[in-house]
Image (cartoon, rainbow, N blue to C red; front, side):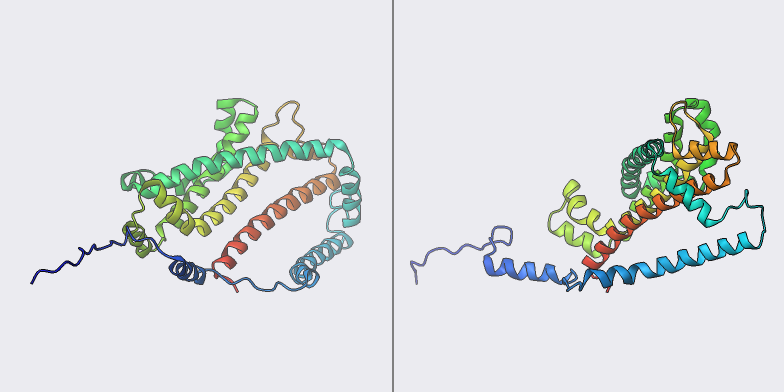
Length: 300
């Protein structure tokens, strides 16, 4: 029997627009992946809880150092006391020449590290996606990462003479492999299920990297950046001792000048400066890493 019912249309999932309640449910499910924000408590106790182990370690080092001075293991002009060194350090950091040296060193450090991040990220992304390229240079990247940076300086000096380019060349070679390996490891450990879900949702090309692969590989990538910075900082300090660029009185050059004058106290002062800068940068990387892990519920 004929009917006058209107024709029905079947709405596909791609055509259907989610209403407000469905959007709220999806947002709630996404929020389950993230660590809920908690009350952090008072700032003072939290700072003290984090700082007192570091202060204890410093006190132990100073005590051992002073004990070695008291034992007269080395003459006082070779191994000065902590008081002498910190007095000289206090005098040095009040001069404009010292801060000019810090500026030169940090400019080199950040320039070389940024170049290494760009090169390492591009290489890591390509190697992780193309199997022939991984087979060709995958082991080479690891070999470069384990190679002592100081081995590159004779070649760098032949290529670029005594110049800034020679130092940056070694810094980039020291840091880029670590950055590349960090990204490769992060991409390799992205769960296959996530990739299949992204494919079902229509993620292709850049969108797949932007919204799925890069966020999933970010923890490993940050670890690679941290390790890359450590290699670049170590390479830079070796470079400043070996490659003395005329007119660029960096921290390494000033340390070398103190050694030429047999000024042990000043040499140790610059060692402490290099150590403090390295610790401060490491604190920044740890803060970024811990914030990311807490946000994703990987830390309590």
